[in-house]
Length: 353
Image (cartoon, rainbow, N blue to C red; front, side):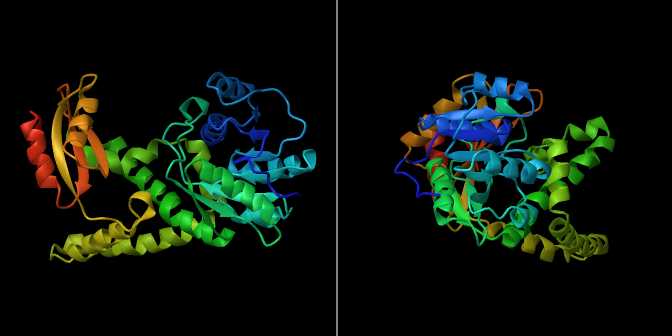
């Protein structure tokens, strides 16, 4: 394979699989004026992806890059077929499990990769060309991978605003089991408890519950495939979690305050997750603002925060039960929350700490 050209992403590009991730990759490429061709086992997915501007359904003879965005169980077969059909192309995949794929495909033109991005919604209509902005993108080459092929994939991910992390397959699968796969299962277990809860109990649900169960609404079929493809790594972490759950249950039953050590361990874990832009997490505080659930109010709030000279680190929105009112938690750096609180009250907002 020859070295990559000076173009940010060489084209044309063929995207195989027009679900959420594949269509988002295609949209991001089109935003950068790259020629994109689309293929999917379901013609309706291609039609929808074309309808949102993700590329063309026309066949392509010699793509420079093929992005395989199919479920993990179909990746190896699809990658091998693409390598055979397009002998001059770099081929990458975006599956969330890499071990079996990288072990079975050793062609120098293949580069395993995995963007750490997604939504609860699936399919081409949920796609966005901005999906990868600020997200980690694991690049998982083998010892035989052509360095020029690695550069093509890393250059593409970086052009999308993603932060690339080069890893080996075993390290990748261990990491995603911890930071993605097991949290998804824990979210599903918690959400599953709600199926047997009295309806009146659920009327007390707030943003804390919604934060925990949000990802449990994701596509079931995809997650069955993902968990099955990374079963050993996920199983090992679940074994550890089961031991800790037994310890926590005993601490709760004892009612002697020993639950504090588990809460402290959780707080320490939160502090280890990288903050904005991948930096060490910064101490933050929240200011809560009540806003009417009407068009333009959120924009007005953002404008007033900007006028106060405060940068937003994060935000969360909850809705009050039975009222057309929302509660926005504006998360800012510790030390400026009091000033923001005062500034918002002066501008007529119902703000509280």
